[in-house]
Image 1 (cartoon, rainbow, N blue to C red):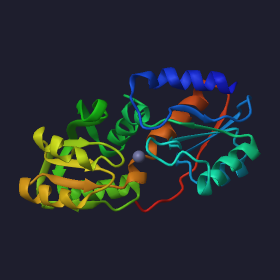
Image 2: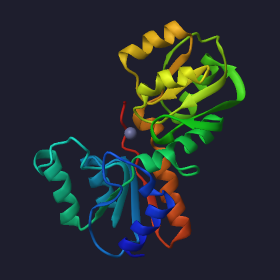
Image 3: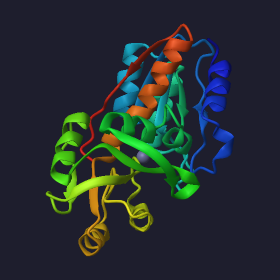
Length: 248
Ligand SMILES: [Zn+2]
């Protein structure tokens, strides 16, 4: 398919015009027009670019692309090396940030819910990207932590009483630790996100609401993967997800 067709299709699918975002959604670096192979990954790091171009990708789709608001606008240092790698290989970079967190089926939070047995009931947070709902099977915090380890292949950092029974959960992939107080106000038993900050520990201890940091990378692997699988099924293109391990 054509790059312009791919860009238009994903833009409509993820409703990118609905979001006020911190970086451009869609094509960020333009490569060749004809797309047969799409690589996906969480972050457009040098490691991902090299793995994807070695595989022969025509386009790379990520959750964390480039040109973030407030970043240095010059193309120097690691940014120069990354962009010149793409341009030399004539490979496009497409990035989808908030629209890929939020999408009702393909989004990070929807995909996380499928893997962790969470039944979505509503949304909250900035532009409604965070979700709340119930555990399919009520379980203790300790059991839920074990299930998360198994599902995400990464041990979460958990603040709370292991024996505490959980029923209602709020969750948001990535670095959404600043939503913890909003989650507490919703009356949930636990909040799950990727990263944790120092003050979250005190709020968890003093409210009795558990905080689960399951990994920024680990919680954001699934949206872009689901998008790639959807594109491969819908169009005659090959897709491969590259999981470039990240401990955070
Ligand atoms: Zn993120």
